[in-house]
Image (cartoon, rainbow, N blue to C red; front, side, top):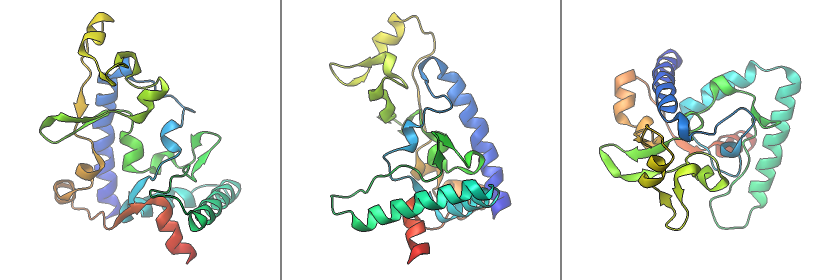
Amino acid sequence: MIENYEKFLAFLNNKLKDFFEEQKPYISCHKGCAKCCKNAEFPFSFLEFKYLLMGFLNLDKETQDIIENNISKIVEQKEKYEGEPPFLYDCPFLINDECSVYDYRGIVCRTFGLITEKEGDENTRRVPFCINDGLNYSIILDKKHNKISGKLYKKLGIKQKPLGYNVGYKFLTGDLIQKRFNIDFGEKKALIDWFLQKYD
C-alpha cells in the first residue's frame, strides 16, 4: 500500500510542480512562510498519517522530542477547549516555521496555495486564505468586492491567467484516485485527532 501511495505522490508532485510554475506570477510561497501550517485543522487520512509517522521515525531524537512535546500541548489544549468547533492549532511538525517531515507531509499541505475548483466546475473556485495576508494571488485581489479580478492581471501585464485546479482534498483522496493507484486512504479526520487516539 505504501509503495502505491508513493507512486501517487510522485504523480501528484509532478502535477503540482507544473501548476505552481504556471501560476508563478501569483505565488508567494517560500521556505519559512508557514502561514498554511498554522491555525488550521489539517485533514489527514489514515494512510497519510501512517506515512507521516514514517517520516517522524526518520528524525533524530531531539527533533522527535520537540514534536512529541508539541503534540502533548495541542492534545491538552483540545481536551480543555470549550469553544465552537472546529478546534484550530499549529501543526505539531512545524519547527522554527519549517516542516520537519516535508517529504512525508500530507496531501492538503502539498496542494495549499493554488486556487482549487471542483471537477468540471469553474464557477466553484476557492482561493487560499493567505490571499488576505498579502500573499498568494493578492496582487489581483479586488478588495472592494473581495474577489480575484481579471482586469487586474491584465493591467499588471501578466500573460498567464489566474487558473483554478482540481486539487481539492476530497477529490484527491476520493474513489477515482484510490482505484487508479490501488490505494485505500481509510478514515479521514483532523491530524490531532489521530494523536488523541494514541493518548487515550
